[in-house]
Amino acid sequence: MKRVQQVAISFILLVAALSLLPQVFSTMSYAQQFRDIPDAAPSHQHLLGTDDLGRDRLVRLLYGTRVSLLLAPSAALLSTVMAGMIGGAAGFAGHRVEKLVMAIADLFLSMPWLFLLIIVRALLPLNIAPMESAAVTFILLGGLGWAATARVICVDSKSLAGSDFVLLARASGVDGWHLFVSHILPNLRPLLLAQFVILIPVFILAEANLGMLGLGVVEPLPSWGGLLREIENIPSLSMRPWQFVPFALLVAVVSSFHLAVKRQESTI
Amino acid sequence: MRRVISGIARATAVLLVGGLLGATLVRFAPGLGMDEQELDGRLSHASLQALRSSYDLNTSVTAYYMHYLGKLAHGDLGYSQTLGAPVRDLLEERMPETIRSVAEGLLFAWALGLALAIATVMARRLAVELFTSFCAGVLLCVPAAMLALLIVVIHAPGRLVIGLIVFPKIFHYAWNLLEQSASKPHVFHAWAKGLSRTRVLVRHILQPVLPQLLALAGVSVSMAFASAIPVEVVCDSPGVGQLAWKAAMGRDVNLLVNLTVIVTAITLLANSGASHSSIKSKLREV
Image (tube, rainbow over all chains, first blue to last red; front, side, top):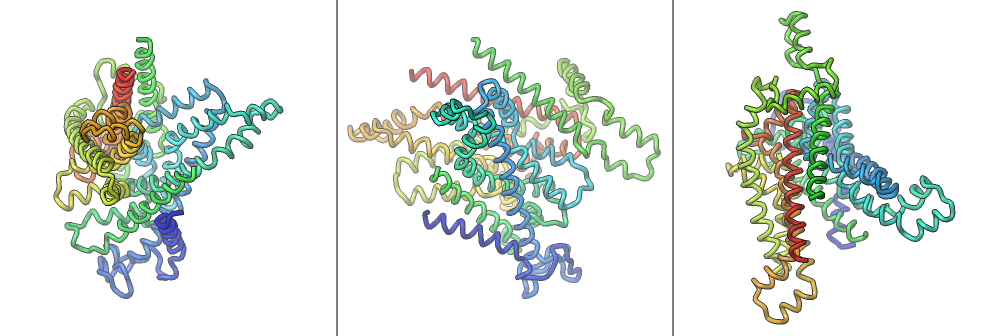
């Protein structure tokens, strides 16, 4: 593994670990308000200052990082599992099923993903609870992002279905389902793993976009998208530079994922 | 001819099913029928009933969609309840703005992406490679809405954003293609024969990858349209992207179904245009 990739993976793990232990930095809650010091500059008590409702920015950033870093991989896992099952089965089951599944994938790919996501997310009830909104946002991300991956998996599954060892297994009387689960899917694992890692930064960015449009995780639960939304009120880049910390962290984490993806691609 | 007809039939089917999918998503969304006006305590029971019935909640999706297609055949796209105007007028008003910003953005993205990809492949220097991949890499890690916001804050033209969002994808794909093409034996032979840089680039590196670049052109149109939504919302640009956002926020069924059909049609048109040109170009090679 190259040194740059080692650093990238270590950085992601460090950020994830910090986000899981916000109590180390502060015992405050992400929703706790200090009404006497709204919009405060960084100080010893509040290292990144407070937001316009008097909530500690550092604590919100740590909890927001936890939400984004836990849910984006979960969404990527959902998407990869869906793509693995649908694309894998389509390539394995034969020409007709493949054509049908690829037509459905084409349909999903014909509509810009963000457009579809905005429509579906915006149509959820207005009074949805914060945790539910976080879960729904990432389930939607996972549920709508399978099509492109399924196409890639389908091609690989098709070539595996025609390989000698599958032919031998068929000749030995192994049934279709057992063949698919025990022989096709394990061979698709490296590709599925690479697709899983590729999807994580995609979903982190998608959540950030949704959050900035006001369609992400509902307040007071923080997420990177919601935290970036606060920057909308800044009149110039030089004012309150500490408000850009969530943005810098997001860029650093997504870059690290991209560097780690290169490693995954090279291992296939 | 048969291939063209089957392609058109397939595209039409995807278009119709796409519209139906849009209508279904909206119709079965748990939030449909919830209107902020219902919170107004001054409204009587009859007014609330009238408000709810305006959403056609009793009509099935297929009945609604058939009715929509029937009206579409006569050029009637329906009426937007949230914006209080015919959908056709809204689209006519906003489409030119989006087309102009997408076209300018794509032009910028392609000019910059292709130029940097060519420079990286031809220069063959680590410093150039690091610089170009760093620029593209950083832009790839910034959310589209955040990029739009930064552009607004530094008072740069908003149309630049779409170009900056699409540019890294074009650069990376074009760079990979050109790199592969430049490492083919015939290119080394051309260099060894002492052909000029321009001739090697145009005839031996660029020309063989033209079909793939044309396919990328089709995909980039779809990318640009998708990025128009956050960009137009953040930059407050009166285009179709902003209209889509307003329609989604206002749960406007008519507007959403029309926009779904239009966006699907644009994507299909761009993709089939690109694949048609790439097939033609492949045939020419043969």
